[in-house]
Length: 478
Ligand code: BGP
Image (cartoon, rainbow, N blue to C red; front, side):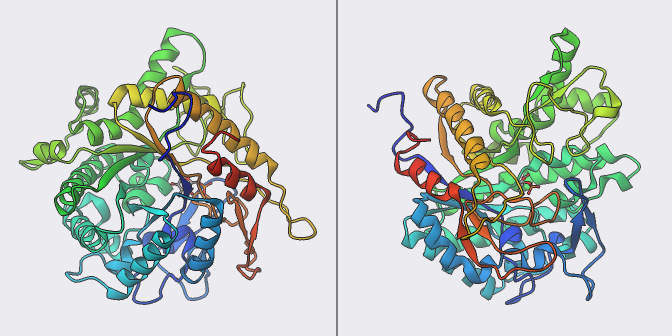
């Protein structure tokens, strides 16, 4: 047996991105338009603007991204140099089914991912693939009304079956929906739109619509898990939530109850996807609010038959909640939560809480007893290039190092099974919430800027060699 104070030998160190935030080539080789292709930039750190479609004179941020589509070989060489054991990205749904409702796939799109996965496997880097990371075909929004339409289940299942069959011997680790719980904050249109192609604020009963949408996604996700396992029983298919612990603002019992109830906004998703059924608290909430979710006969059995093999989380920060929130301090991006006076924050107000990661991992593991994969964690910052092309991102090293230290405590002191760790934006990419290049996360710098300048050339940051050492020592040197 290995000593208990070490991470497992097969720990999956790597990095994470999403297709639309890196690939560019938004209309190449038969790719259809996705919902993020029509998102313009947002205000600094708040939300992006949803537009009706692509306009000729506008350059949308995700159209070029960091041109990973043409640079992936060079980038994978750098990932291999850092020692990556895995690399998380997504398959852009409209590269495979440009409109989402076709019966046969776009071969050129399938070919691209074949080549990408082959390149990763050449360096023994396991692909970790998200099926839906904010990239649904725009056509499914315009012609079917997004995930509110139950017909979307079939389209998603067709897409999933197609890529499972095609890549069954290349990809072992899959995630169905990225941060499926983001849309629970339905007041911010960005989240509903990116998760499901829905702007909940336009509906008279937004929560009724939201829960119906979510039900469709639960069924689609469970079906995908079941089909994936039938195609290749060795596949590990996970669900994913945005995990942001919400602490009680004070030790008042009322604040504690509020924190417990607010956490259900995250746990509902993993409760259903990991345990395979709706928890009783949500039935009570629906009764109280007069919400009626249409479920077809057999849905309950589908949810039970498609339980996730592991739980993936993104973890960036924690927040606090009060029974009676002070309205002026509420965080617009994350709903009715606010900043913790005990913590420092990034330039975007994302609070740095490494200990919260240990807390989150223990909470989730005790609840589900399933392996947890940390598929996003990282520090968004404006990096300065110094003479000689050096980028001294010691603030990023400090952030990651402190989080890894707490993750190790969760593993070695609390007994949590953590499968791997893939820092977000291992190569600089377009920010999800702002649509800007300036909020960078990478170990690899990309010369591309919000004014359109830059030649996409890559440069190693200080954190590059630091992370290389972390991986080489299996997390002993951080
Ligand atoms: C997560 C998303 C990612 C990513 C990350 C960082 O919520 O899954 O797509 O971008 O957040 O967010 P941002 O880029 O806004 O800093």
